[in-house]
Image (cartoon, rainbow, N blue to C red; front, side, top):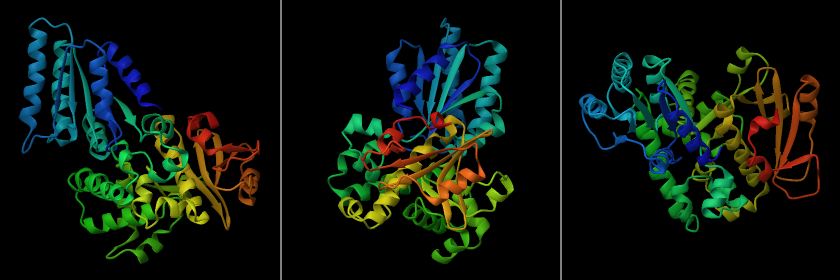
Length: 399
């Protein structure tokens, strides 16, 4: 979904009668603040906009003061106030305070509409589920799509496959050393330190960082937890690794896809397939330049598969499907998306081969499944979906 569609969705919800708090969440640098400020500039709203990004210490009083300012405007004759608070997760005990103030306005029939936004999906969702149940709607902003990066920065398909989709780093791609340093310092380390370590009790922060670096470098590959243990220092046990991988997933950095089996129990026990949410995270953690990667078929094949995976994993919550993979013995299907009783198997190729044994066996096992082959090669084969076309469609169309 393009950023403009998120603006339109938020605009529609704000125009409705006051009923829910609107919560805008997503990873760093996906454009949450830009979406909100564009909305405010587009319309003549009577609004208050504040960000918790710069406040320090106990900030509960700060939040109540802002809310009381909105109430004063209503008491002074305003029919409606739009209260927008950015980086809400940085306010101590924010969800309990918002619940109290929102419920007071509801009882007193004060027409204060509220938009909250935050980078940490982990803390945002914790607060929402613990305190604000039934009072909010969520708008989840994914990483930028290929069409957005192409339109805004002129990215070619190959550049998108390698450099991914962080708009703030787009102008640095001609200097790959500088680009990688920016990704590591301003995106990866900031996301881990501020969105996970500052907000969650982590007994082994060095292990969390190691796990991210290992997982990002092996994006699009299946890796048993026991193998991870052998590649990490002071790794502890598989329970710890699984927990840390879940935190990275909730922060929209690195996911661990489970094996599709039709059984939730078997899926949970399977080895995860590692998948970054943005291919820039993959490129930043391996020692391969853009040109070297393109000229190494095996490596480039992994980049292509991981790129297709980023499209699927970013859209999973938006389109309400489960993303997994399938494997039996040596037979494998790269990705499986499922919703209710609908199943799609997706094989990703960097060459021109349009089918494989794994896909045929998967189809025999799940005869009602729809199957697709996605290829980055531009060749005449109607059985394949071109990668560029795949990246420009909503995955729910595949059902």
